[in-house]
Image (cartoon, rainbow, N blue to C red):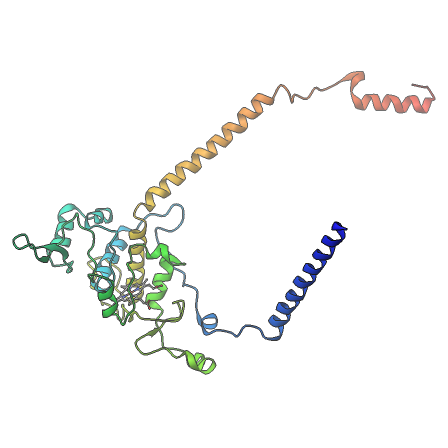
Length: 311
Ligand code: HEC
């Protein structure tokens, strides 16, 4: 009786599930989800090749230095890289004197770090030293939003790790600003870019609050021997720099990776050889010759059969 009852309960449950599944499928066929403007117009990041790519990649120091220059002269007005200290710049090939001059002379780096007046104890600012982290342009989030139409310019230290596409995304975003296509407005009349935002098909919702930061060739003056400071080149350089800020130890990781792979290969070969050695005795094939060879036995049996000899 109990069993019958549980069969009935199972049947009812299955029926309910079937009915709801049918409803969902019918709904999906009869009224499919409307195409969204993001779905239609959002673009995947452009391809970007950097020296640090791949398992053997190394940083291109000259490019990182140019990227630092673009960051300092353009992006630092709105974005911090608060996880990097001035002293870390030694990894880009600068010596101590150059770093001191960069941070503290006021010629290159303009933003001061919060401090106190040693005489009065009041809030003040001072020039950074190599031990300081890069100071952010705004004292707090409220100030940052107030200066950017309520949008928050994110700290860029880890941005190439935090966004899908990494450096390629940052690069595409910087060179991807364009006029909103007329085609888009025809299909989606309500999707017009709001005032104060900028159309950029690489940004997830197509409109972002960052005004195009790199607008003209030669906006930053590169030193001797550098490639021409085109918009494209500057965008690439600053993206490469942001790969470094996000993972300054990338080269160590690559080196360790190679050593580990070589070691594992070696261990595999060694393991295979010792396996062969240990099992050699047990797996030894015994070759039988003469009357005991299975082929010879079969031949003998056939001949006996033909000749009518039993056994
Ligand atoms: C005038 C201020 C300003 C400058 C200069 C500026 N940005 Fe921005 N940036 C913003 C604001 C504001 C946002 C937030 C946009 C939003 O959320 O709509 C932002 C967002 C970003 C984002 C994140 C986009 C995302 O996916 O959330 C990246 C990456 C970025 N900026 C890179 C840069 C780089 C690199 C430079 C220098 C070449 C730069 N920005 C210069 C204001 C600025």
